[in-house]
Image 1 (cartoon, rainbow, N blue to C red):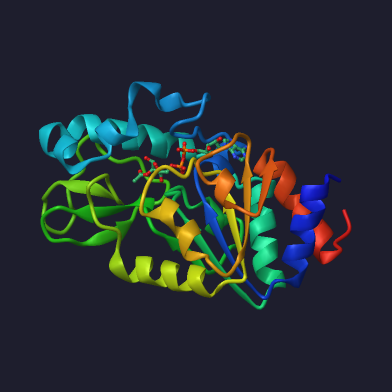
Image 2: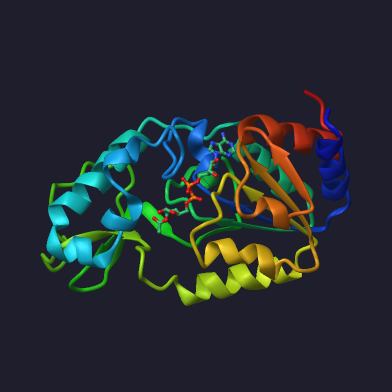
Length: 245
Ligand code: OAD
């Protein structure tokens, strides 16, 4: 086991209040493409161009095509050992908060409980007319889905570029990060704000990053672990909590 991984495991075993921030990389080993990685399936869809309210106003069918494609892709997808290790860490520490930028619902599927989905959830719809939210997990939606209550156009219940994050969720995230003694950033390119700024709110915490490549966060953490989260997180949890195989 590498020295940084041992150091990280020691910090985790001593921690009582852990905050984890995840991005698309944590779901990569489940077969979900990241947004900016080399594996990006979404090459034809730059997230900044298609995930914004103007694009939806201009061409809702194109935006829905992207979201329906992603919903289809997610249909057969399972959490990977990285998601499970994060759920295990939650079970082992006194206080735990998971802040995720992911909209895929895989953390909850892995058993994580205290999850703040600050960018929303792709399985939910939000009515552009009456504002009603609905869980449409696993359902195939029309190319331009209509609200069953009022007939207006639905949109995915996700946060788009240029939109505010839900203030209650965001406040809870900042509060959790400020009070934690260990902050773990996993599989995020750390370029999309405000989520990327959470690292700086973790002023009093030991800061650890898990990523396959260096990011703008790498130089600002105490321990940067290079590798895949599906591999490193189970090792980290096992070492920190003395778990068997
Ligand atoms: P990105 O696609 O920007 O970054 C994914 C990160 O995961 C990269 O830094 C990869 O190096 C890393 N990575 C890939 N595979 C990995 C693995 N197996 N283990 C560990 N790391 C791995 O995704 P996010 O940072 O989540 O927002 O992007 C942030 C936001 O931008 C998303 O929430 C989304 C997007 O546009 C909205 O839709 C509002």
